[in-house]
Amino acid sequence: MTAMPSATPSRHLAVVTCMDARIDVFQALGLGLGEAHILRNAGGRVTEDVLRSLALSTHMFGVDTVLVMQHTGCGLAGVTDEELRQRTGADLGFYPIADHAEALRRDVEVIAQTAFLAPVRVVEGLVYDLVTGRADEVVRWERPQP
Image (cartoon, rainbow, N blue to C red; front, side, top):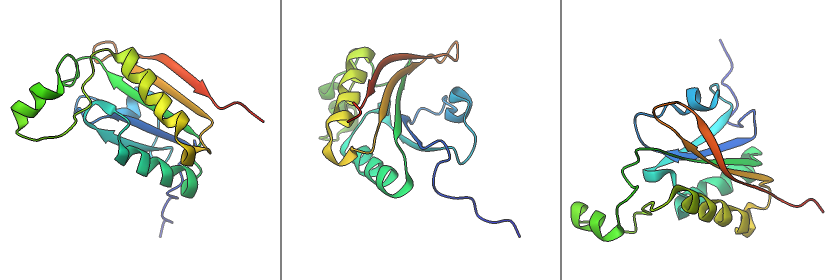
């Protein structure tokens, strides 16, 4: 009988990315099963629930690096919260993306400034191109070492 693999990601990595079915996160980032925690939501945005998951990833499973990966052709790009509320009938904040670079800078900053995520050493913000398959770094933050 084969032992169950560990829930601790071997690369100490968490990836926040979009739920878009066209993205194979493992292939896009060259990852194998068991190497990273993958957190997916609409737009690949850093929401309160993502922070909850990252709190567990960092404190219980040794994650110290986070990639926030948005992508070209995203359904949240170029729309407003109001448009999405009208289309869905849901009175929610949808975290629309007017500009990938600005959205990634904001999301990386949220992780960097969240006190309970102090174990995180590096946060990178990437845009994945659905056509070329390239993931380009837009922003990178590293925690200053004491």
